[in-house]
Length: 431
Image 1 (cartoon, rainbow, N blue to C red):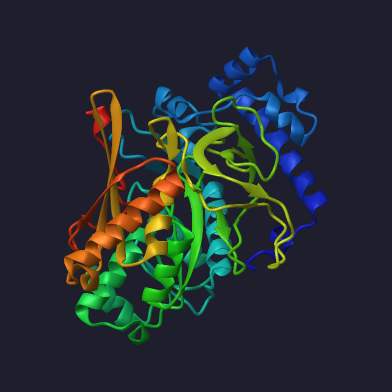
Image 2: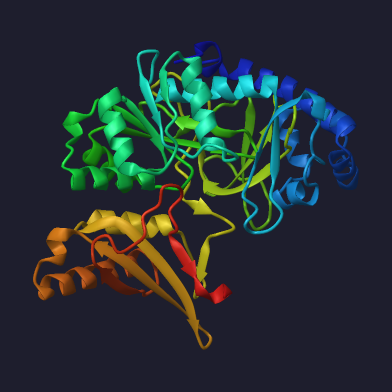
């Protein structure tokens, strides 16, 4: 552990720390952020009404549109003179969201990323190859400062130029790869094309996030790169990567509860659900200065579990994100997440881990077509073999999803590769 004092803190003591920090945060936002003061008054609640962690449910939610509606600095709780860093979303779907950091916020972020890196096998002797994007995207810089904090060597290569990335990893002796899981697969595929074997690299582990990925994809990445693959979770609005991370047990991602209070709610009703039930993750920040957020709806679907972890950390764990409540596909009344399709494909084999879901509407009926990229060996096989694979995929998809789908097998390298988040869904119903 990087910081066992907090990471393995006694549960009762941890909840005391949480409550004190929550009360301080609520007082700050109530008096310094007009948005929250008005929202609390509308809900008929004041900071003094919160007398325990369970009372958090009395407070209203914050959603992404609130950040957009108060663009750019309306939700900040500090004067701009105290802000030393700004990050922003791309704004491709409308007004972007802007997040700010004070110097202390950056120190907190670095601390959380240090914990995450150590949890995934890094140390002061590591060479951390960061292929996340830099710039306004929080991924690259978050990992960067965490790696520097633990004393590792940082290779801030960012995304793109994959063959150069591989040569650099080989020449510099990179031991940990940080990027999206889909880009890790692309790197592995490019290594095969270049004739570079995993044994020629010193990679030992990988820290992958920014998009949902399945256990089966983990197996493929670990096999192709000969590494231990760890999941990391975060979002810019909360702090960036480093909200939670897997430990060596790989049985859920520990949420750093001395900085964040997680809840699981029913996305339809907003009702808080008990541990063990699937729902939407809601996070309250309790140490952030520039942009504290109260009960922020992440839209990410997961489960919380508090059973004792073999690693010794006491912080609650969240399961890998299975999808999002706002980009969940509803096809003929059935809720579908791309990760469900991915899990089926990787279980069957004979395909590459590249696929796309194409949703359309013919008349009043929704249709689902799944483009699946087959392996070189399978594609060069007899037509009968391809037909058998297509029928097997169709059958397993229907058993898993509960609806029928058209399966289209495509040649290797047909589906576009991504250096960032993979585009898994094309929904033509919105066009």
